[in-house]
Image 1 (cartoon, rainbow, N blue to C red):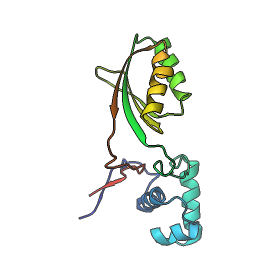
Image 2: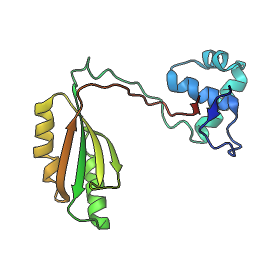
Image 3: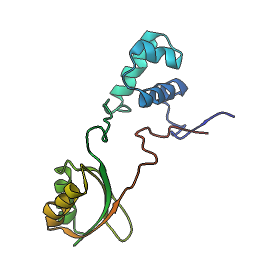
Image 4: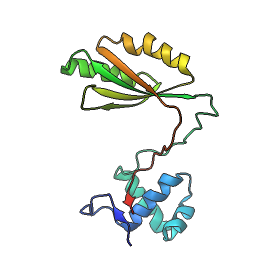
Amino acid sequence: MPRRCFVDNSNPDLDEIDLRILDALQKDCSLSTSDLAEVVGLSQSPCWRRLSRLREAGYIRAQVALLDAEKLGINTMVFASVRLSAHGRANLTEFSEAIRRFPEVVECHAIMGPFDFLLRIITRDVRAYEQFVFGRLSTLPTVQEINSTMTLSEIKSTTALPLRAR
């Protein structure tokens, strides 16, 4: 059975080969152009042209190294739900700008429901998380409430987008 594509099929800019290139790069962005060409079934020059086009069109935002947090001694991941004291544009902007300055916050999502934001926070240990929450996050004037959920173990983590489904 053919695999279904999550990407909008009406997008004339992406074909099956483009999707194979993007899939391969999500698995290993360190592939040389010649190795990538072999993986997707192209010769090197057409693969390079497609890769350049995908970069220029913004489909590939960056190529990064994924670090091993455990080996680096960064062992605590917490999801913190944050409720703001008020919902005016100024409060949202102030909170968002403050969050962008905190390296411990690796993700921040505006959400619907009883809380306004969901943060994924990474620290070396519980003590460092406590210091971050009480010394920085909770001192923001826009923050009314923080609800923390600490992870016990990571079951699945990926940066790969689901371009295809079975």
